[in-house]
Length: 141
Image (cartoon, rainbow, N blue to C red):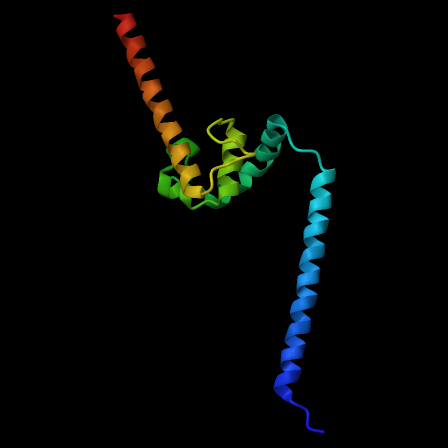
């Protein structure tokens, strides 16, 4: 009556894999049940939630200006600096600042795309502000 150690290890691994699959499926079902019970957030509710989370993101992810020891503003970040954040953090920043460049219910697939949209939006806003200031200066003449 020799016991095959390889067969025993294989059987144990197969049993562990089955247990893990069952646990994962149960967890997924539980998450789906919770998602069905929880109402979907409106844009305003999402913004309130994002504003609460924003200070932690600013402290941990925003680079610090060496002259003032203050974190840089979102508008001053480059695409590379924005890409250091996760997609969820980028969406949170957009929602907290009220930026409509991203639909949180159907966000872009990659964080690079989110960061690029944010950067392009800020560049456009800076250009509009420059044009507005120039128009005001010319109107004063």
